[in-house]
Amino acid sequence: MSNEKPLINEVLSRWLEPPQDLVPDLDCVACTLSTEDRAHAQRWRDFKCCAFQPFFANFLCGAMLEAGISPFVDSQRVSLQPLGLIPTRDFRDRCEKTPDALRDKTHLCAFYQRDTRQCSVWKFRPGECSFYFCKSNTRRETWSTRAFAVENGLAQMALAQQGFSPARIAEQVDFLNSPPLGLPSLTRAEAEEIYRAAWTFAKAQDALSVASWLRQG
Ligand code: SF4
Ligand code: SF4
Image 1 (cartoon, rainbow, N blue to C red):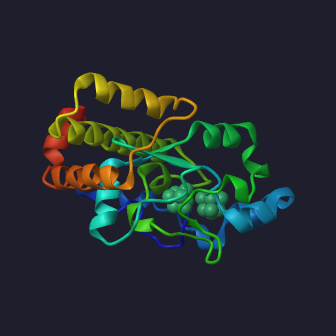
Image 2 (tube, rainbow, N blue to C red):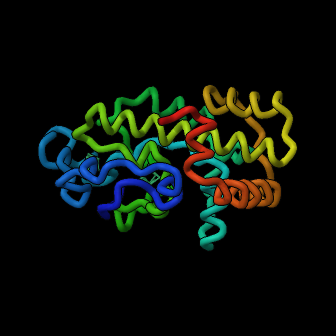
């Protein structure tokens, strides 16, 4: 997590406009768990909430590439897939086996910067991170679900536009839900081409059309 106030990432804000009062009074610069949960204070101070690996949709990766930011990070943690950066089976299992409060540097998100204790891709972080806060509430969770639907739906549409078959897209969704062991990655060149094209498609879509595909009000 970072310490800036904007709630939602710059990309998703094209299609979603969450109410501003979802921004907490306290942000992560004054991480509440690092002071309130004494038993695990060091864990929260060191790594904040970033001891897991979120999914990065293909168009988010393309937006990063356009901004000159590389989405190509630790291959132990993420697999380069047409749908986006999907956490590997090994890394997901490692995180799921360890209670959150006990996670350490071996569970960190590939985009977490240990020296600054900040997210290195804050403006492009997924909705899962945008809407997360330790003092959770159902409104934030509802918006997080909407953000995920936009990410997942747009990423799939972007693949369809590139000629991926329905079966191949469904396979990608299965990988996202449960990545198999040893899931082969795309090469960087292959991934870059797909991610850039996904962003070109996604940024041409307006909020109304995205909402209508996803049947959101
Ligand atoms: S969301 Fe995480 S990093 Fe931010 S204040 Fe809460 S516990 Fe700390
Ligand atoms: S993307 Fe950024 S905010 Fe999200 S878990 Fe990774 S480092 Fe933390």
